[in-house]
Amino acid sequence: MKELTVDLGQRAYPIHVGEGALALLGEELKRLKATRVLLVTNSTVGPLYERAALQSICKAQPDLPVAVVTLPDGECFKDLHHIEKILSAAVDAGLDRKSYIVALGGGVIGDMAGFAASMWMRGIDFIQVPTTLLAQVDSSVGGKTGVNLPAGKNLIGAFHQPRSVIADTTVLKTLPQREISAGVAEIIKYGMLGDAEFFAYLEENMAALCALDADVVATVVARCCEMKKEIVREDERESGVRAKLNLGHTFGHAIEKLTGYSTWLHGEAVAAGCVMAAMLSEELGYLSEEDVARVKALFEAAGLPTCISGLSMDAAMKAMASDKKSVAGVTRFVLMKKIGTSFVQEAPRDKIESVMIRSGWY
Ligand SMILES: NC(=O)c1ccc[n+]([C@@H]2O[C@H](COP(=O)([O-])OP(=O)(O)OC[C@H]3O[C@@H](n4cnc5c(N)ncnc54)[C@H](O)[C@@H]3O)[C@@H](O)[C@H]2O)c1
Image (cartoon, rainbow, N blue to C red; front, side):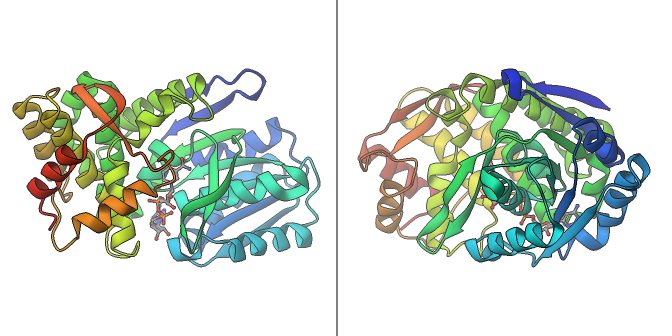
């Protein structure tokens, strides 16, 4: 078991990573002096892991009142209506200001449970128990919470840091292979944006990672959490360096938007977006052709898409200009000087178009 700390002064919190970490949940709630608990999960994860979560709580504090709310499974339910469901469950469970919400699930449940916690009685504490690879390496750490609006993804939300993150790597065994690959996309992104050695490690160990080799998974999840916690410590509210975590996301969000958030998983769009960001870095004279080939090969080794078909370049340009990360309609990209060294910059339209044509957009 590895324990890292997200160092945010008085709001510092631990990340527990390893096999069997879920058993720590009860002790964490005891340490944090929770008065009541509302466990938020979904109809897929609940039947798999709710029991183990409840057993851990009961073992540590048999008398602690615990209620469970189970949401339907899917990004399409990440909306205000389902936040209201969580808040109604909080009313029924009698949560007070010292109560805890526990998010047991992937990024969708983590974002929603965290957002509900940020609102209940103007903000109570919560614990993240991420159960997807993507949530373990990315969404559970850093305090971004929120839901979608019909007008766009994650348009409303709050920065609300968890008090603890419990990433049990054994739960990944029930994750569909496509979801594992989607998580691997965010993992490769970390190597590209900030750690060339880690990128090389992934090149050597990709097959083992995709097969969920226990040692490789533990190493990788811990390394990504380490990188994310450092970035969050430096720039909690994304006014600077945290923007690097959006590597591949500008193109990726355009892919997701144009395909109605239903055909591509987020991680798949990020994979194609990262390859495009590498190509753009090459077009601008930073990255070598060999490095672009390495990036593409690594995503392909993880079974991820690296090009596009049937999507309109003009529509993507509009989507990118209206992306919530754009400021006054100007799109900025995370680019690489070399693998492991990234920065944020605008790019000329002709270079963006050239990359899009190379990637298969029409
Ligand atoms: N807050 C952040 O910083 C941040 C960062 C990245 C992504 N996100 C958000 O995260 C969401 C995507 O998260 P995700 O990829 O985890 O998707 P998800 O939460 O939809 O989970 C993917 C699927 O896997 C299932 N699942 C989860 N754990 C499982 C397990 N152990 N075994 C079997 N099935 C399991 C889920 O029920 C779901 O069907 C998006 O809404 C995105 O906006 C947030």
